Length: 512
Image (cartoon, rainbow, N blue to C red; front, side, top):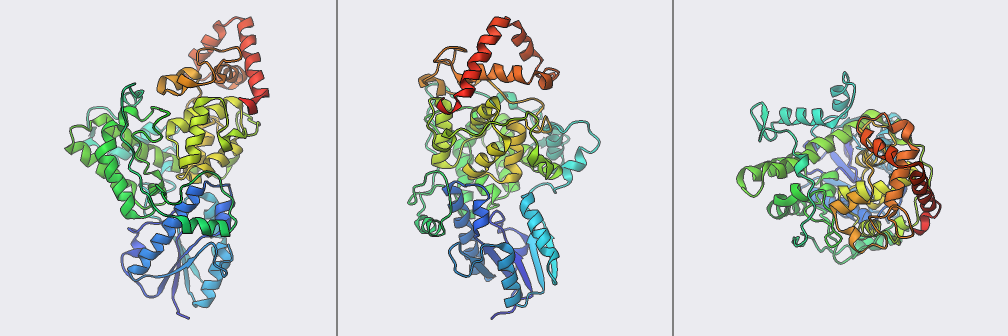
């Protein structure tokens, strides 16, 4: 049995070949990666998510071994795999006479606590190091907002642009404005054709067989002969290059658009590769900035609109997560109690926008941010679904969902369950917004224009019911004042009819 001085644990979302750990081969170091049942079972995950992570871990370990690093890999079906980080690590420490245990700081609070607690049980030295992936440290956002009354992303985002010199002209933003969000909200034109997305076609049947043999529960659909998501750095970089050439010129314009014929539109679909660290946010942002400087088709609104999502929003949400956890996971300021409807698991609903967004999520383990926020998220907000159930659904169904980025987006941005820590107002809307940004309403069972009646779109009555139900909390919100003034213009009779319509929908929510 080989003897090593140091044992280093690499988690399934820490597949960073550029990490300083790996710059040189050290024969005294053993790297371990584990596929274990608890990490697949704490929520019910999409089959493509489990396969994507397992496949990327396996290819990462193969890459490390080919470069001369000593590795140990626990397959989900290995007989000696005790399906526990602690138990497997204990065996390795004993077998290889390990003197030092090291790990990279987890991105999830749950795993951070688990590994901290495990380290305290050891009689050998232990150390946690940075993942060397993000622009910020865990505590940076907390420190930035320490003396500010509110935690709004915009000043944080501007400081990030200045600090890292991204899209800057000296001390000023290129183009004269910091944010071009108003130019990022266009609906896809009727005769506009979107080119087919760049998709891999990988055979993952062996991984699928292992998952079945291990009896792991999962949701969603998959073609095991044509898996589309990158599972190594080379493929992730190829996906980035395709986005830069074909998609970026239109991304900013149509990033909020929805269309039932195009599941990914001009979105990069790089979030999975980023979140398991096959590629870094810095190299993605620098590549986008370079294309902006060289390609006349990419204007400042396109480049800034994309960079803001990563340099601003992604880093901001992670900072909020580490500032607010663990209390954040229990917040429910709107006192939402209703269970998640069954059609979130099978897509069988007459609401076309909801059906298309859910079915797409089941088929691809993906939906873009407006589908998540303003269709499925909006519906859950208006109907008062328990935040814990919303969290579990989003965390399980999306391939790019890891708690540090998922819970802040769902419980905060989408469900307003944090009472305004992240969003300055609830992101709620009637059918008008959904129709404005896409074509889901064209062939729906319901009528987008109607508030009452058998064919009235549920979003309409549910929207006004939400406004009415939460007046005590929201009426004083400056950004909600106009909405309440409109509601007050309805007669008492009109209000009652709308509220009764909403109550009917809520009482029959499983049949919408």
